[in-house]
Length: 491
Image (tube, rainbow, N blue to C red; front, side, top):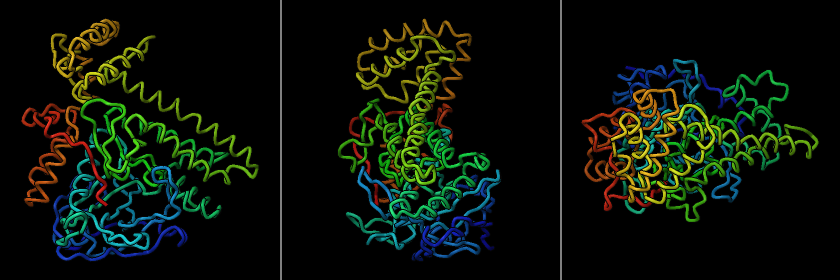
């Protein structure tokens, strides 16, 4: 059987300065760990064929399929606030683009497929652990309804990579609406290549914002569109307790998808200052800092677009500032609306924001589990006698005082108790990719070649809002000796 990818490539048709043409480096003995069969079908691919040895060779980069035009994309970026003028895909190769069942163009990229001209002396490979982490978390984010890159497949290569020790090598096949980043624009801006910036902006508009093609000021409208998508995306992150961990401009997607799952993590106990990433020593990308950093990144994008706004620098800056000024309100509206849904409020009244903030403050003071507090609050909405939310607090009396006010407020809503509970359960997951669960999956795979825990966790996380009694333990927070205090990039 022949593996057929219906490639229709557009990015590789751009000028050569946008990328380097490079093929994946063949590996010794590729073996498929996991194929995302529903995603394969969505992309117009045959999952049965992809699961053959021939398919595994393609998904590992050992064989390049017909119609592919493999490239490593060029970009720059601010990394923890420090600008690096050339980064690029140092361990990833974009095989090409396909049009999915919904008519949406999707990149198919191999991550961990060997060195490229942008590798900066790196080996271009990926270890098994980070590949499994990205597969688990990206697919969990998709199930939670959050815009994200996705994982089509994970394979082991039959080779080892050297990090602190020798680890099994692996390749992730990643799918995105594109891999264009704020850093892609910065790559050309630092080189003062205005023609390339315009060419890139036109490509982005056609691909991600086609409704702007007839706009009177398309580049202004493009910045406005990216601002709106990023504001909404970060609000969604906060509403599920997600911490990206490395919000560099080269990890900020122009399409508004979550991209580059390195030391990412979900909070257990609610803590606005929570940091997991081992390289975020100053807490730049802490949970509550993410909206501010998103705006900082968008400001860097605006700087790149200024030459397209106007020849009058002062006017261009003023226009950009006006557009960036919409971020805070857009984010706040999305975040507050999401919080109201999480606590079962479907109309707006004075005092609602303060009521919700009081809950968050009490959760932080009492080390309440973020996910379970909101989920169990839904149970209490349907049955006021339910006290599982109360049990999340070190001082249950702190919850009691707040709950009394909450019940008084929800009594003013038109929904029945059952309707409120159903609506709250639809937005408050019970299952998230807990850090200790991910680490257990990685250890089983790396140390024992056992992928059963990985398969089970992926299965549970595919239905994050369903109770799934057989897997109830997967909702539990970690015991003290199971807590994961740091997460790592794995590059």
